[in-house]
Image (cartoon, rainbow, N blue to C red; front, side):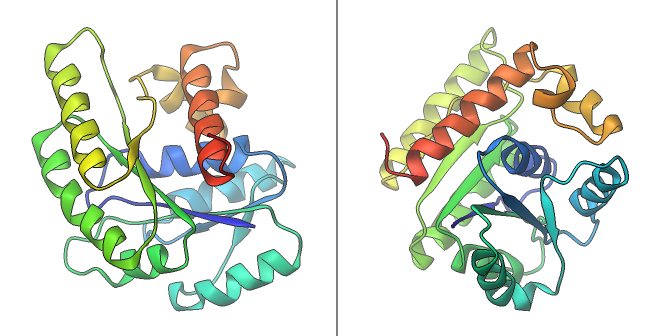
Length: 213
């Protein structure tokens, strides 16, 4: 089983969107844990269950119980365990706990200065713990020179940390619209650019975590 934590110490960068896309798009049995007290992903899974959709499963428990929840999932044949983390403005306990049990971390960010400036701190924590990670730029617009520069800066930042940057995700309506149906863009609009972005992201994560690159 492979454990993936989706982390960034800044809110609103797309952690839940990416966590949900991975939990539905990865091959095999998946289980997702929502560490955010807002419970966005937990409610999303519960709505899916009400609609008769059984992927992903929801792991429930205190964050201190993550090692036991992960062991239980592995014993039950789960292939992927995804951890959706909260922003940590006042402390790092939840973030460190989520990273300490992960095999790999995905770090989403937007192009905003406040988002990018926080990212090195999250990288340092991951490096201290020893978990490999990749950065993904969310809401990317390749027509904007600023976005191109930010993407280049992220690539430089990741390279200096011995890590990589994944294919960027564009700002597309299907990502937001799909949440009303408790789905992801891949499920809601499978032929859309948003779906293609997430399919490629999921493929990259699979290749990295399984050493297929």
